[in-house]
Picture (spheres, rainbow, N blue to C red):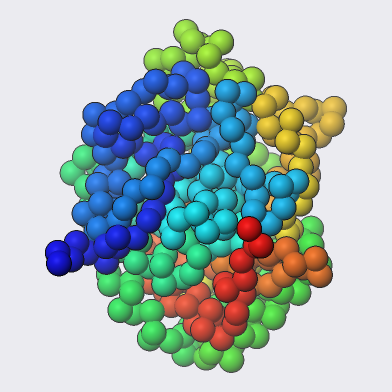
Length: 413
């Protein structure tokens, strides 16, 4: 028999932003309803080289933002049909969480690997910006976009990351640093690893069951030999104004990406993404520059705050999975109802300080199940590392998994 590689025969699916030769790639948009690429994205090519069997494409919000195009299906959370599946890699989260594929690829610009990982009770790895080539992956906002694996366990994330990471002549922003053997290092343990924790950052506005699950996870990591270190993420770096700069950057970059079809084909976009592109087109150079400066200041303050630790532990998002307004996913944000894509704006505000800072600075994050509510819904821990320390995150996650059973819980589907 012919062994193809570490993913030989493994069924994997990819978010419908990844080009697949001869197979439609829509990016969740009617504008691209009939777009069939002539080549594979680098990540797709690398999965196939490693032996993966590509099952198909997974649903994404339009343009990988928050809302869906009315012509497309919305993924359903396997833990409960009324529960939010997370965006924008919702299809990837649901596919892995529901056991439809062993692994999936997602993308993350402001939380899009982590929202669905938290909502579907799975592992999500957002690599360092540039660790994985974005060639042949439709952009939302190139300076913020990351491509990464979504899996049921940490070891699986290590295997997939090893397969897709590394330099790519077709993507000049892909990092040339050698790709370590993440799998071989998994069992090295975490003795002496310094894990930072900021109680205010990790508990303010966070569901009590989740806050206490994170504390318990720290105890587990400590018993595995890690040293828990108190740190302080400067409040000014993560206050709402600092994170609102993300909207300016993301929308302006999105409007640049979609210049060929917006506004000329504006009517083919769904109401939510059309609103987003309109906002992006209205951003001035001065506004973009001010937002960029805010991004640099937040990133600099965080870098200083975390210089003494290897990893930061915090929630992935602010709560467990929750019911949402399915009809709302097709309409623009509603300021009167204070919702966006069927989700309370307050929820995004409470969760964004766990997602946006790591898209600003491009640092790697690992999300993983760390508990369950009284009703049995999954809770999610996020570990954050310095640039190119995915191996450290995976080792910490694997040590946590080896001492707990949360990653073995699956929805009854």
